[in-house]
Image (cartoon, rainbow, N blue to C red):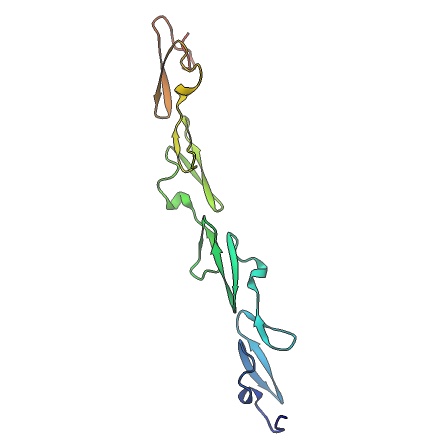
Length: 169
């Protein structure tokens, strides 16, 4: 049984409005919730699940009391507040990728576009010389010499290099 002359429920019942602020009203009180909390049907401040709105593009959202954090996937980095994942531009960050080609940043990754005479390495991080001399019938009637990004044919005596430079006739 409550005393009839209670004027400040917030002072009398200090446990009211956990995760919020108790505001006295005539003969009662109301709760004003802290950031990250909302009033439920009983007038109590409960945690908002910020992860419902998928705020962590490029990562996984982890709900915490009154807030959330993002665990970012590879190719993304977390902001200082850990509430957002941003794409890492590997082309700007890492000077040792896509040698002999051009680096194209993509969402969460990158890919290489290689110069003529080069192809992407197995790990996809660089461009390496293509051995044109390993192509069947390259420099027919001559000798193939592989060069960085190219090749040349040296024709046997009595043969001349074709206009495309790929065989001797």
